[in-house]
Image (cartoon, rainbow, N blue to C red; front, side, top):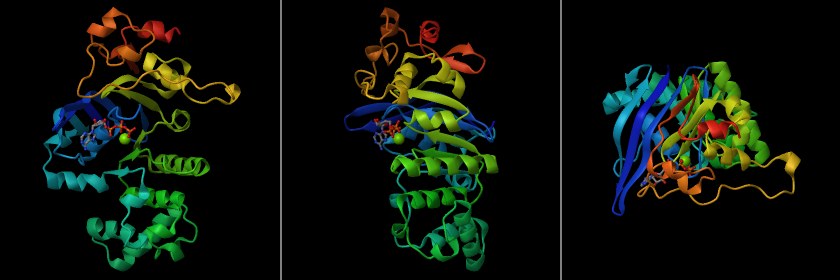
Length: 324
Ligand SMILES: Nc1ncnc2c1ncn2[C@@H]1O[C@H](COP(=O)(O)OP(=O)(O)OP(=O)(O)O)[C@@H](O)[C@H]1O
Ligand SMILES: [Mg+2]
């Protein structure tokens, strides 16, 4: 297995109290595989990714338990300089906001080239050649001319392609893309997503795709992990989930996707709000919002039950949910 996150716990210790942002997350992704991570705002998707990348804001963040195995080795036991080598060369992250992630005063060619100069000890000239190759690869028209341009001279979609190019530069085995297209226009979103999916296949990378967009997931992901209040509530191969969710929260997410055949109808929304992470309700964290909740849901925290060999659901009533 390329990456295996085991029982990860992350807290944020702030003046107001302790926010339990990640509460025992397990997920894995193999070479050439795409894992989509879904869940509402604040469910811990980014924090988990930051822990994997080793870029968690510490303090106030703190990893209080678990393992992050990369090719079988626990990254949490690495020293910072070993960790830095893994980052960039073996795993890279693509963020939502390209403009604030790119350096405004360096040409994109210099920024891309920097990766090769620093990590591969290349000459400035060779690094420039590599930069143009990368820009070609992410299909930036006229790469050889545009290599001298600055980030603000590119459109949002083109900037996001440059971010992808940066992430791919050292041909990492794992890419984590955190809402990579959220800031873009809808048509551009699809192009950037297609490009990312294509490069992922071509380079046989593992991809963790964090997204709100269940529509995108069906096309590109192999499997899905649904997060709620810092836990995985359902994990399954992508097609199983669309056929029949095994958790009421997943069902709620699916029912909130706009559908062409139901145009004009009011869109379903899961009622209520995600819990305050300083006061996660006892039992199942989703119980106050769950249409299927029974007494047991308010007292007993469900484990991730094995629905089948490839599938888990943290719902006491996963059978009922599966049967609609
Ligand atoms: N720097 C921080 N300081 C304090 N608390 C934080 C910090 N970063 C995250 N948190 C806490 O962790 C929770 C989970 O944050 P995270 O960014 O992982 O959410 P997310 O699932 O990525 O949401 P979104 O879809 O909005 O990006 C937040 O609700 C917040 O309580
Ligand atoms: Mg996030």
